[in-house]
Length: 461
Image 1 (cartoon, helix red, strand yellow):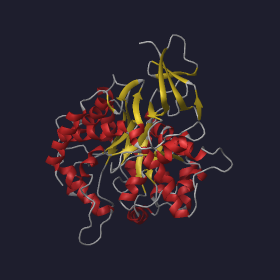
Image 2 (cartoon, one colour):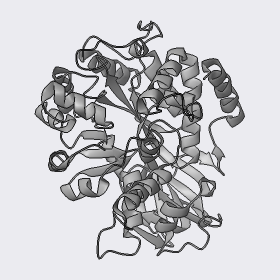
Image 3 (cartoon, one colour):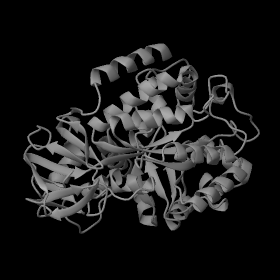
Image 4 (cartoon, helix red, strand yellow):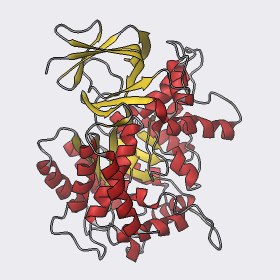
């Protein structure tokens, strides 16, 4: 196929917004930004803008099964821990076909919201009794297949889970997660990489679930293996105060301090949440150039707290965003909430803005967390549409009421703070259309929804 030059009214690429500029795409990557490349077929997009694809660096596809089914207050207190029991109960009822159907529905929603790549923190491994399937990678393959059927990039972050906590064996609700040794995850990555060798849009990482679920020797072993293989290393960090208290009781250190002692902090590391962190923790994360993946809509839904993104950035950490529990699937809502929560907490506006910058610098920074920040977290290049990067992008309709009137000066600000998902017209991954005219280009959407609804009914509340 000859290269194509997409020519919208406005384009946000390589760090700025310009008018009358073409994005030339060939062999799945951006080959030029400016005049259409030689021999390129020009695709005119009047009334539209192009922006980099959005990236969810952290999510659990199976948790889509409980959306709308935990928003109540039971007798006593409702908290993260009571929500977790409901999640465990749903996880125990999911079969492979159910997981496939529900994950595909989730990824369809993601694509229609402009998401082009997803990090799947995969810790559902075994059958409901805790036994391996005939194919031990059955469930991970189901999630990868669901993402690829929609057309998304997917990074399978193969998770390790050993115990319920210090001195506590795994609970009944965790038996689908646990394994005897950290080597199980490493071997699974080898098998999965072999099975997906022909698909460059499926990549892998290692993910000790948390300091609660993994003893120190597991953290050390997985960190060493991730470094040896040059893989991303993801871990839940300091999401709840109880996690911090238990870690200090077991190790005499905070979760961040323990990860540092285990050699698990570095540029390949993504600390998911990092909410309940003190000044020493923030400095450790920043000094190691760790990426912190904030998931503000989930963190709000679960009452987790607010990620101190301003302090983390000032210390040298990087930021990415994720949909996590899938209560919402909208990366721009995550970007808005990241800033908005801090405004409520700090009592001021523009908390994440850099002083003295352009009017749209805050919006461009937030958009970067939702695009390039996510790609970096997953160990992937791209996220800015610079030449040589993957051609993952979305086309938005500038006549949508939510962003009507956008110009070069305020396009990104309107997109970040005001754009509705109805404005997303087309989505491309590696130069191939995934969404056209607001609908999936590869799937029968009615069938996807019908099969997912049947799976959701089987799983129940």
